[in-house]
Every structure is written in C-alpha cells, then in structure tokens.
Length: 415
Image (cartoon, rainbow, N blue to C red):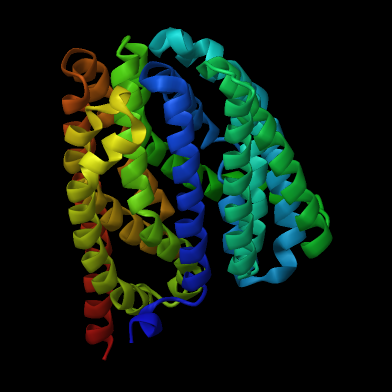
C-alpha cells in the first residue's frame, strides 16, 4: 500500500538521494574533521554565496527543457541547445556580480571563492542540464546512478585530500572545482550519446527566457532562503560558528533527502497533470502528503535524539551542533510544504506566482540576516530560517487551495 502511493520513479530517486546523501554524509564528516570548524565555515560561506548566483545561471532553461520535453520529446535537442547557450552567456556577467557581492558581504571568503566561480557558475549548471535531460525522458534510474556516482567521486576526492595531508578551505575549493568540471563534461558526453546532440533554434533562444526567468528566480530565492545565513555568519567573522551551523544544516538536508526524492520524481507527472487543472494535480499530491507528514515527524524526532551522536562523530570543534540540530529540525515542516505545493504550482504553469512569493520571502530573509545575524549569531539565523520556511509553505499552500476552490466552483456553476 505504501509503495502504491508513491509516484513512478520515486523508488529510484529515493535510492539516489538516500545513497547519495549517505555518501555525502561520509564526505561531509571527512571534510568537516579535516578542515576544522573555522575553515569549514569559510568553505561553506564561499559555496553558499556563489550558489545563490549560480542558481540564476542559464535563466531556468534547464527547467524549461524538462517541461517542454515531458510534453513533446521532439523538443529535446532544441531545448538542450538553448540551455547550453543560456548557461554560457550568463557566465561572465554572473562572475562579475558574484565577485562584487563577495567584496560587500563576505570579503574574508574570497580566496576560497575564486575556484568555485568557474565550477559553480558554469559547470555545475551544465551538470544540472545533464540530469534534467534524463529527468525529461522519465529515466530517473539514470539520474539516480549519476547522483550516486558523483557523491562517491567526491568521497574519494576527500580521501585523497586527507591522504596527501592537505589543509585549508582554499586548497579544498580547488579540489572541489576540478572534480565538478570533470563530472559535468562526462555527463554532457553521456547525454549527447544517449539522447542526441544539441540543436540551435532562433525562436527557442529568443523566447525561452520568458518562462525560464521565473524558474531561475524561484531557484535563486530558494537558495537565498536556505543559504544566506551561512555566508552572512562567515562574512561577519563568525567562521567557526558558521562551520558548526553549516554542519547542522547539512544534517537536516540529509534528513530531507527522501522527500526531495519524491518531489523530484513528481515533476514530470505534475507538468502533465497541470494541463488538466488543479484537481488533476491535487489527485497526485494527496497520495503522497500523508506519507510525507509521517516522515517529517519521524525524521525530526531522529535529529533531536541523535544530536549528541553527531557531535561525537564530527569532533569537539563542532560541540554546538548538539544545540543547533534540534532547533533546525523544525525546518523539515516548512521545507516539505514549500516543496510539494511549490512544485504543484509549477506544474500548473504558475511558476511566476511561486517565484514572486519565494523571492519576496528570500529578500526578507537576507535583510533580516544582515541586520540580526552578525550580532546574535546562529540563534538569529535559525529563527529567521524557520519562520521564513513556515511562512513560505503557508503562502504556497494558500495560493494552491484558492485556485482549487475557484476551479471547483466554476465547474459547479457550469453544471
């Protein structure tokens, strides 16, 4: 009964996220212990800052690829060509903007940031387009294997870092960036061989941005919601605290992995159902929401109970993680609501509404973090993050049910 409620492909994506996050957990523990809280805080701060801008790279063209290919497979090669053009064209402007933001918000992470500019603003987006190519063809088994392989390579890379006795956030950033470049080029070659080479079409290149910009805005605001506190903490000189807070946040993200797997596997189903309206989308959502609610309760309790164990594994440098983890576990509630109802609106073609709401909350989070986090530290960051995630979930849920109610009322009046 449990498995019948899950969308097709959810099993592979659950395997992907659980196995992938287990490997990332190993990588995270090795790296956190190798760098120590302060240097880990510098790396997390640099990566969080560049990720905010990297999420805009390509202007959401990869998401448009999934949407259009899910509805018409013949569009794939054209959308692939468009996505690669967009990613390439956005690289230099975003590089300049990210450097400027780093100078203003977190100048102490710039040395670790430099190698990440190339890997995250360009090659991570190419990697994402590769995953989206598999997703758009409903080949979630391929996505699962690629995610797990990538995670395994990073564990091995971290092992080499330790084997050679290297240290420091800047050195690790170069290792991390080099691995990202190689992985992205490999997955792109696989996509060319499996699904076809890119094809350029002027109309697609000139029009994709109209929809893609809302996907990009939604993604960047989601990253802003989740990560602005980390680079503000690191940039304000609280690097050790940022490292511990980043570690606790990573553990919460690992706990969210199975729900992320389900939402990812739902995407193409929601795009197809969205053509038929809110009721069709709701029929998909209501099958998985009870499972998700139960999982959130279990995972939140597990994070609370296992907090002392996390400190033992990470080492004495991360003593505050034991206090942070039970507090941050509440994020699971807001994240689940925001992901499911946000993706439902996306499937209905209301990505613009979702993006505006996410962007509004995200900007508010950044402002509050800049005002409060340098003074009050991780408690302010955690309070802001929890409040924002619950607010966003409530807003997206309200918008969805208003639309569903209006659709049903209109159908009743027609009859």
